[in-house]
Structures are given as structure tokens and as C-alpha cells.
Length: 172
Image 1 (spheres, one colour):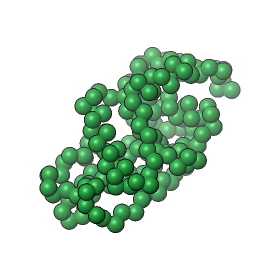
Image 2 (tube, rainbow, N blue to C red):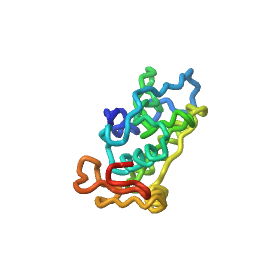
Image 3 (cartoon, one colour):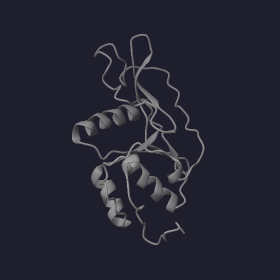
Image 4 (tube, rainbow, N blue to C red):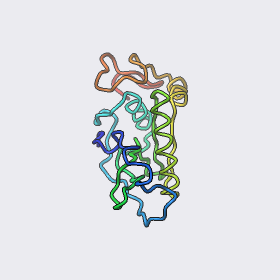
């Protein structure tokens, strides 16, 4: 499931005082992640970093879903959702959501706010965030080389596929 606009900057569009956030009680049901398991090369990712993270998960045979659910994190005065958070990955074997953020600091601050709201509103949901330095550490550890850098879009990548340590050209 590619980016469908569920998290397209809607955070902050409601007027202060009109949106409900974590401080107000509301009967919320946790959305359930669902979808078909795919391999990294069967999904169109929003960013190259997400594609490489999926490759790493596939390499270790860890099942994952890409952007399978959006969580409402703010509502207007009528109870309509005005902001959502859509984590990049869900790892069902660990009941864990993963958010990869390799963006500039202004966008990371917005992402941190959304994750804080997610944790306050849905305390039973486990979500880990991988910052740029965390992701670069994974790339170094597993000897993954990206020619575009980690901010390049997956669809813009032109060139040979990066090789993971122990992987052959045929992917064996």
C-alpha cells in the first residue's frame, strides 16, 4: 500500500482549541493493520530509505506490511479526524510499527509530535522511530551502499541494485 495521502501533512491544519488531542477522553479503538505480504521489489515506496529497510527485513525473513494503517491523532469539534499518522512499516511477528525518518529537522519535529500523540492516544501501540543516524548505522553495519543517498526517492534510483553482504547478483 503506497502513500495514499493519509499522512500528507494534515497535522496542524485544525485550529488550536478546535482539535481534540491526547488530553481529552475519547473512546478510541486501535485500527488493525492488514494487507498482503510482499517482497521489497513488489512495492512502490515513497523513499529509498524505506525500500532498503524492506530489503533488510526480507533478507532476515521478517514479515512486514508497508503503511497498512492510519491512526487518527486529532479531531475537530464535531469528532471528525483532522490529522492522521501512518507509520511506514508494521512487523506483525513483533506487533511493532516502524517509522523511518531521514528528513530535515523541521519535518522530523512534526513527525516526533505525531508519534508522541500516537503513544498518548494509543498506549498499547508499539512504534519505533529510526532517525537518519540510526538508518545510516544500519546501512554501514550491513554494508549497503546507496548511490542516491538516503533521501533519494525509490523511483528516481537509476543504477545497479545495492548488494547486501552475503547476497549474490541473483539475490540468493
